[in-house]
Image (cartoon, rainbow, N blue to C red; front, side, top):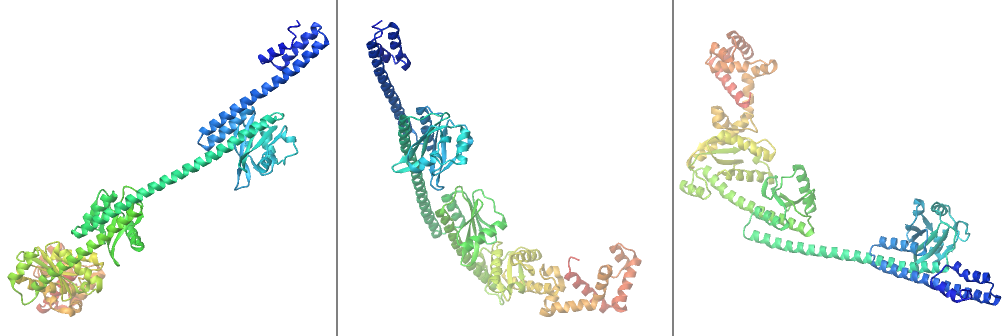
Length: 639
């Protein structure tokens, strides 16, 4: 029994890490055994020493656990790269190491001058998780302001802190009582606060405060490391983007240089607009349209539809005003201009986005296209002058050497012995001044040359010599097409066909007389041939400038009352007169042609006699009436 109540027994308790209450066992046993007081005092002393040793071992074990936890924390934080992961790991480890109910972190907001809840672990209150603490308010605000740890066993009753309604309400809702807060410091700067809190009143030991301070130190370094890493990544991303931009710019500069060399070579070797369009799409990709000033297609490369007319006009006008290419939707427009003259546009639908250098390629292509169109226009004008000089010589009198004319025609691809019609366009068009006059002559030259003919400006007229035999159809086509170009009515007289150089001069004079006759008949803006006007046309064509006024007066004096009567009453007296004269004065045949009764024809002619006078059927009056009816029909051929 004495052996069992010896100090050795306390060593055995220490060896098996017995609970502190078990160290009372040997003393109880000694007293029960009736050991002397000196032995009990000795055991009492041994118990005190043993408990002291036990407490020391417990502190060291706990310190070892804390150090191990800090080591693990540092290791974990070192492996994290995302700042959110770092913050969550810090708060979670703080809660575990201190065995707290809740752990959380606030960070300083320099812009607003307060601190805000950043991460929580173990929290259940949404209101608490959204708290913002003014600097100096509450426990956390005081820690953030002073940079010193603060601890309270019961926050709601601790008068050291400046309580606010919002903070206290959040703390109550979360159910927190004991709170420990330590600063997150980088050097001398406080960046936030790390907390551990319990929902019961208990003081935090000095060792716990020291542990949270150590964890906060690790956390601050980890936060700064994550920040620096994020900044480094952002810088690397910016460098990568800059490198990509530099590479893209370098590539675009190389493309621009290649395109410049290629288009320069195209101009030097006499390439066309189609070659320029192909070069642009080879360099930039996509599809391209080249259009002239009227919106007509000059070249197409790739699958691309013609844009809406109104959109294109607006975009080309903007490009011309700004002096550079413009974007509308998926399409890029570059105006093709020479000085103030609009020559057309390039319309590009690229595969990829265009950078500035790519836009310069499109604009350079538009400039090259303008040069090619000007060159083509110059060549066409030179050829037009040659062709015009030939036509001028053909219709001049006296006629020059016919064989020499035939030879000149063959060089231009014109067979002068083949049938041709001549069309004369009126003074009202050729009298236009400046660019409008030149535009008409240029149009006529192009119109004739594309059909294997000739065109020239002569004596206030535009004359076209066109292959074919239908002079009336040719005159109407010229009047219609040139009216569209000029935006005003165009009158055209035709004659022919003529074969051989010798017959062209006379044919031109007939076409010119036909043009004059159309004006005299009031048929401005129409086209017809001498054959369609008959002898009346030839007669009026010789009248000259007075023809229009004379025809109007003659019609009024001769059949004016009958025409006016028909217009007022809706009758058919003019038609009856034409039928009556057309059948040689036979009432029965006239009635048959008009599909009316003979008495109806008789009554209508009686009315004519009342309007024109009783002598209207006498030979000299009848001839005038017939001529007037013919003129009336020619003035209004659609009646």
